[in-house]
Image 1 (cartoon, rainbow, N blue to C red):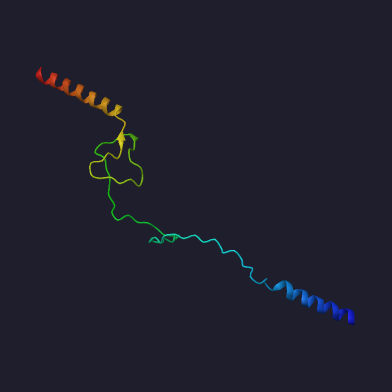
Image 2 (cartoon, rainbow, N blue to C red; image 1 turned 90 degrees about the vertical axis):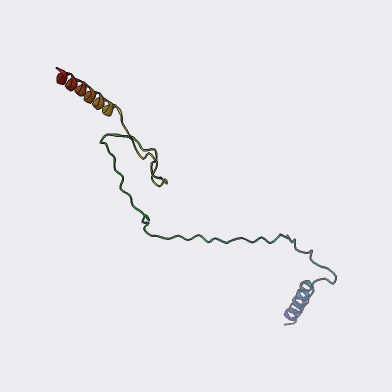
Length: 113
Protein backbone atom coordinates (compact mmCIF):
# COMPACT_ATOMS: atom_id res chain seq x y z
CA UNK A 1 0.00 0.00 0.00
CA UNK A 2 2.93 2.26 0.69
CA UNK A 3 4.12 2.37 -2.98
CA UNK A 4 0.64 3.41 -4.14
CA UNK A 5 0.52 6.19 -1.55
CA UNK A 6 3.93 7.47 -2.66
CA UNK A 7 2.92 7.31 -6.30
CA UNK A 8 -0.28 9.25 -5.64
CA UNK A 9 1.61 11.87 -3.62
CA UNK A 10 4.17 12.23 -6.40
CA UNK A 11 1.46 12.63 -9.04
CA UNK A 12 -0.38 15.19 -6.90
CA UNK A 13 2.73 17.31 -6.38
CA UNK A 14 3.74 16.94 -10.02
CA UNK A 15 0.32 18.13 -11.22
CA UNK A 16 0.36 21.14 -8.87
CA UNK A 17 3.83 22.20 -9.98
CA UNK A 18 3.07 21.93 -13.69
CA UNK A 19 -0.37 23.56 -13.64
CA UNK A 20 0.60 26.80 -11.87
CA UNK A 21 1.92 29.50 -14.17
CA UNK A 22 5.49 30.53 -13.56
CA UNK A 23 5.70 33.81 -11.66
CA UNK A 24 6.38 36.78 -13.89
CA UNK A 25 5.69 34.90 -17.13
CA UNK A 26 2.99 36.49 -19.28
CA UNK A 27 1.37 35.45 -22.51
CA UNK A 28 1.94 37.80 -25.42
CA UNK A 29 -1.06 40.06 -26.09
CA UNK A 30 -3.51 38.91 -28.73
CA UNK A 31 -3.23 40.73 -32.07
CA UNK A 32 -5.85 43.48 -32.39
CA UNK A 33 -7.13 45.17 -35.54
CA UNK A 34 -8.77 48.58 -35.20
CA UNK A 35 -11.23 49.69 -37.89
CA UNK A 36 -13.35 52.76 -38.46
CA UNK A 37 -17.07 52.26 -37.84
CA UNK A 38 -19.19 52.68 -40.99
CA UNK A 39 -22.96 52.98 -41.10
CA UNK A 40 -24.55 50.48 -43.50
CA UNK A 41 -27.95 49.05 -44.18
CA UNK A 42 -28.02 45.34 -43.56
CA UNK A 43 -29.89 43.30 -46.12
CA UNK A 44 -31.02 39.83 -45.29
CA UNK A 45 -31.95 37.77 -48.37
CA UNK A 46 -35.46 36.36 -48.32
CA UNK A 47 -36.64 33.50 -50.53
CA UNK A 48 -40.35 33.53 -51.28
CA UNK A 49 -42.71 31.66 -53.55
CA UNK A 50 -45.56 33.51 -55.25
CA UNK A 51 -47.20 34.71 -58.41
CA UNK A 52 -46.47 38.03 -60.11
CA UNK A 53 -49.24 40.02 -61.76
CA UNK A 54 -48.61 43.09 -63.97
CA UNK A 55 -49.92 46.45 -62.81
CA UNK A 56 -51.31 47.12 -66.32
CA UNK A 57 -52.25 44.97 -69.27
CA UNK A 58 -52.25 46.20 -72.86
CA UNK A 59 -53.67 44.72 -76.03
CA UNK A 60 -51.19 44.92 -78.87
CA UNK A 61 -52.57 44.64 -82.40
CA UNK A 62 -51.25 45.23 -85.89
CA UNK A 63 -53.03 47.08 -88.68
CA UNK A 64 -51.72 44.57 -91.23
CA UNK A 65 -51.47 40.80 -91.40
CA UNK A 66 -48.18 39.16 -92.25
CA UNK A 67 -45.25 37.09 -91.10
CA UNK A 68 -43.21 38.55 -88.24
CA UNK A 69 -39.54 38.87 -89.15
CA UNK A 70 -38.16 39.97 -85.78
CA UNK A 71 -38.99 41.26 -82.31
CA UNK A 72 -36.64 44.15 -81.41
CA UNK A 73 -37.72 44.03 -77.74
CA UNK A 74 -37.39 41.16 -75.30
CA UNK A 75 -39.86 39.95 -72.70
CA UNK A 76 -39.57 42.14 -69.64
CA UNK A 77 -38.24 45.22 -71.50
CA UNK A 78 -39.88 48.56 -70.81
CA UNK A 79 -41.57 50.08 -73.85
CA UNK A 80 -43.40 53.32 -74.49
CA UNK A 81 -45.90 54.53 -77.02
CA UNK A 82 -44.43 54.50 -80.52
CA UNK A 83 -41.73 51.87 -79.86
CA UNK A 84 -41.41 49.16 -82.53
CA UNK A 85 -42.49 45.84 -81.02
CA UNK A 86 -42.43 43.65 -84.15
CA UNK A 87 -41.03 43.93 -87.68
CA UNK A 88 -42.90 42.23 -90.50
CA UNK A 89 -41.51 40.49 -93.57
CA UNK A 90 -41.96 43.19 -96.25
CA UNK A 91 -41.49 41.27 -99.50
CA UNK A 92 -45.04 39.80 -99.65
CA UNK A 93 -46.47 43.23 -98.83
CA UNK A 94 -44.42 44.91 -101.56
CA UNK A 95 -45.62 42.32 -104.10
CA UNK A 96 -49.24 42.99 -103.12
CA UNK A 97 -48.62 46.76 -103.38
CA UNK A 98 -47.17 46.40 -106.91
CA UNK A 99 -50.13 44.23 -107.92
CA UNK A 100 -52.57 46.82 -106.55
CA UNK A 101 -50.80 49.65 -108.40
CA UNK A 102 -50.85 47.63 -111.63
CA UNK A 103 -54.58 46.92 -111.17
CA UNK A 104 -55.20 50.62 -110.56
CA UNK A 105 -53.27 51.61 -113.69
CA UNK A 106 -55.22 49.03 -115.72
CA UNK A 107 -58.55 50.27 -114.35
CA UNK A 108 -57.67 53.89 -115.14
CA UNK A 109 -56.63 52.92 -118.68
CA UNK A 110 -59.97 51.14 -119.24
CA UNK A 111 -61.89 54.07 -117.84
CA UNK A 112 -60.25 56.51 -120.28
CA UNK A 113 -61.19 54.39 -123.31
